[in-house]
Length: 119
Image 1 (cartoon, rainbow, N blue to C red):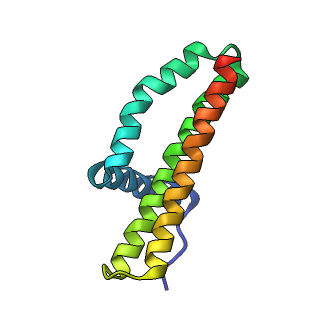
Image 2 (cartoon, helix red, strand yellow):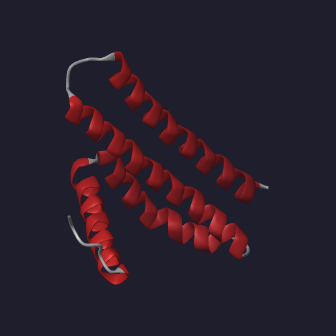
Image 3 (cartoon, rainbow, N blue to C red):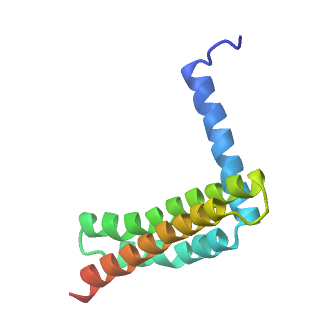
């Protein structure tokens, strides 16, 4: 039986695993790389165009949500591919649902930016 980690030790391990996740996403996921590169423009624009701190948080936050959901979608796809590469209805459905979640977040991004910046 493995002894429990101390809180600081657990935080260090969790941070290491998270960094490995970011590295894997950057290495293997084209969509994630494109979104991170887009972040170099989107985040500064959000901070510049937001009229107050609430708008800045909304403009940045909705974009960060796109990145979070992209990571989760990539995780789902990796697990599905790990289970098997043969065509299966449930595998296809899982991947389609993940893709739909990313699309919905992108629509929220466009809607939020449009509402805040064009009105």
